[in-house]
Amino acid sequence: MTAEQQHLDHADHADHADHPENPDAAARLSLRTGGQDDALEKLLDEELTAYNGAACGAGTPEEFSVRVEDAAGEPAGGLTGWVWGGLCAVGLLWVREDLRGAGWGSRLMRAAEEEGVRRGCTDMTVSTYTFQAPEFYRKLGFRETGRTPGVPGGHADVSFHKTIGA
Image 1 (cartoon, rainbow, N blue to C red):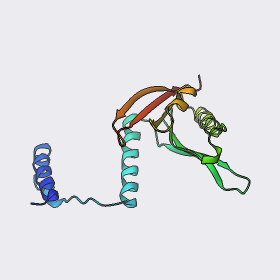
Image 2 (cartoon, one colour; image 1 turned 45 degrees about the horizontal axis):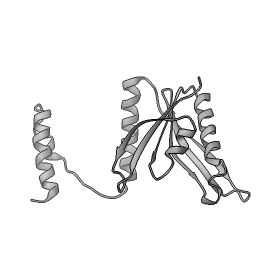
Image 3 (cartoon, rainbow, N blue to C red; image 1 turned 180 degrees about the horizontal axis):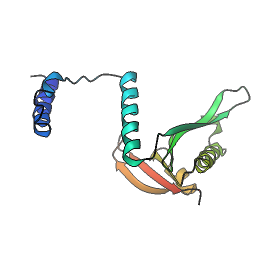
């Protein structure tokens, strides 16, 4: 029996227990593991966004970005994030290596915070790995709210929160 068949067999039993009104439903399903699946990612994003919005009444997340460009108009740094239900979350932050330490990361974060406040947010979150920038976020007034040790490669994923707009 393959690993996929074993997993499906286990899933069949779990599905029968969870949904006794439709015991044959699991028999018509299959699992497939693969690489990047843009269509699946789009579907999951749409379905979870709709579910979350209905569950808490916060509507749909709105994405935003902040960009740093050099004299040639090339990206020299940037930040992506989203706002939703009073929360401003930073997803990605990057500054080109030759510009690190010159204050661009702080400027990007201040711009994101200002955008969050402009859109009515009261809270801001971000996460970083221990080998990246935990002290950077602490200096910006974020407080650690949790960490997942051991990932990746013995480091930790650190979550941060900050009250904004107060």
